[in-house]
Length: 159
Image 1 (cartoon, rainbow, N blue to C red):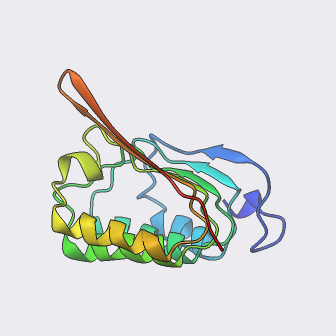
Image 2: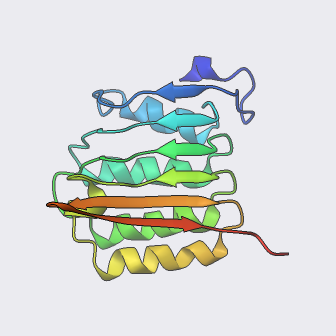
């Protein structure tokens, strides 16, 4: 990903699709590139399997301080088991601290928000959205057998 950026902290207007890959193999490099802002403006990471929850937490932590990604699709990302309170807290930090994301897709189909039964942890994380001034669209969608539940939030900044 280092080659996606000409200047650290300044996004190139590119859309990089890296989903369905074994991103955990070079996870440290990915997290470092995200934290340093060596990423394009649009990143799609659909259907990535995280073998360890702490790796996903590191990824979320890097996103919280990223200054280049404006559009992020991490739909259908899966964890080995239910996301814990620490992961939900990191999601809350992402919602509160990131100043670049405009669109975020957390939709599921056996993904973190669908199958993990996050309960009150995700509610607390979503509460941190009140601190965010840049996110305009948050998509959390999940399929329920034959029905479909879709939650789409749009935000307008009033100053």
